[in-house]
Length: 154
Image 1 (tube, rainbow, N blue to C red):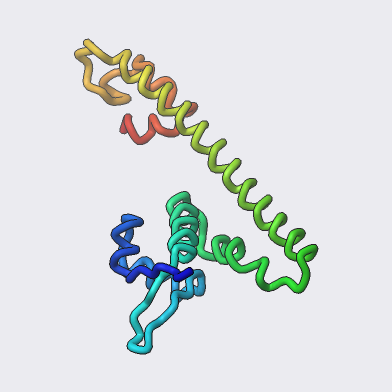
Image 2: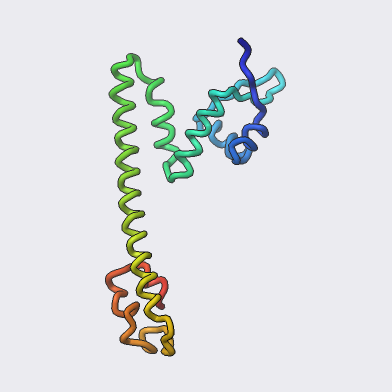
């Protein structure tokens, strides 16, 4: 059975990324493509799948250090037991980071939803939209409670 290989430009196009991004991940030790005698990078389906995982983590805010830990911890271990323990720890830390981001995003979503409702109360108001122009405005009254309003208001 012969493996199918892809050139870097084809991989970049398939994964909707850039050749430079793929080379960067290679430089960081996250990806090691095959090379022809002439130096052309060749990527197997395994490389493409690995790159998809790298891109997904990067697009979701994970640092190269964390991606590197996820990618390289198991191969640095001498036994499956050691690998299992260390990889589980790395994954648990990544899950905790995701949970923190989810909580932060949920808080932000809630704040923006409340902000939208407060700003909607200004519909039809003829006062200048500022602290001085409309001191009784519900937006103005909630500035200390909702951070997003500080960006919206003044």
